[in-house]
Image (cartoon, rainbow, N blue to C red; front, side, top):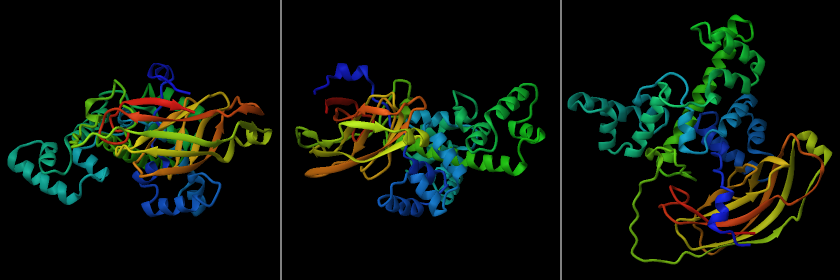
Length: 385
């Protein structure tokens, strides 16, 4: 059926979380080589990416728990900025952490700063080491570290210790209550109370540093227009894509997503409830035709109730959407593309065994502005099947 823009606005599309593989590599939990090996292995197994990495011995279960816990906070530039916990870092340190400049680049820029009296960021922009948008986002991240603006609790040490299984929620709440009456940090309080050992706090601080690196890299990626999937009204202008594209010919965009095959029902058993998830392999077969060089968006409209998250495989990378659905940017590909999709439904805690109508409708969306797939672009949903 056809969905008008007005109707689409009543069910707003949710941004898809930054991919787990990106979070793990950006944070230094694993290497690019480890990720590539795991993705190849995943093609031949029925496992999630994190499970493969743990089985390969390159990722600790606690690190995976922390990355998954933080992943939901990295769905937009503003989300990534809200993660700026920890002590305020110098601009050069931030850009080194994000691998946007090398130590040699920083040394040369500092020498020039000393000669000219300019700000370091201005020198780096003028020398072409970073863009103006990247500078603005890095400065915004730095301000959040200094306490200027809201910060997500998920990146605080206590929350990381809970997520990695070092302490319980009750132990953290007790320590936070005590912290109101003392200048001590929460790690010292937990050690004094005998809840954790110093090495556990050191581990939590190490994980926090890695997650902050992943968040900073995500924020800078959004600033450059990479992975950007929506631009909420409250996101600073620094997070928007400002690229200009010149065209010499106008081609009428043609986009078609056809669902060739799809399961009619979702059957949830008691065993699925017990393990918390349900895998359905080869559930959808779709055909995509698109002549827009910017790419397009594949839309997933979901009916919640039985699941709280669904992992979608078959698009060349791991994709997760919530119970309200989401959209996936697809690069331009010539000709007709046929894709088979498999799903892992992470069941809602209140889900019951039974047979349900298939909860996912697949559709298409044009990009009406912007210069790349999803980057600062409006989304116009024109068909859902």
